[in-house]
Length: 111
DNA sequence: CAGGTGACTCTTT
DNA sequence: GAAAGAGCCACCT
Image 1: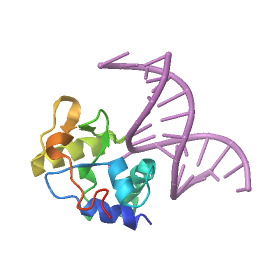
Image 2: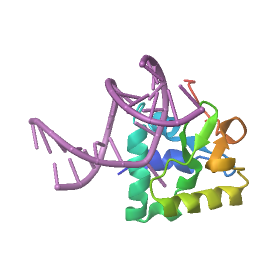
Image 3: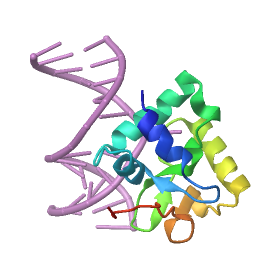
């Protein structure tokens, strides 16, 4: 079960987004960004999609810029729609400015 | 146990 | 700036 990953994703506040690598690191799996993606994909199977704001997790393309890396085109469209609904402004191509909407972890690198 | 795959990320050409 | 290669961890066959 990816409960660790889900826990981190649930901590992401509305109107903010986090990258897979960031979630993986906070979940205790540095470098396990791929696993986070697998976990989110499994969300649909487990039916936990309604409990975990997976739409707030995006892929980190260029530094300071997030992007929807989801494979499923349907889920991607839904994610973009949900993010806009939360107040996150998406640039052209669905890119997100992490400088403005990037989630700052409560205990990043401390402790 | 071994091989292949993937909602990732970084470095190099 | 875009494309390709390598590294990474977990899951499935």
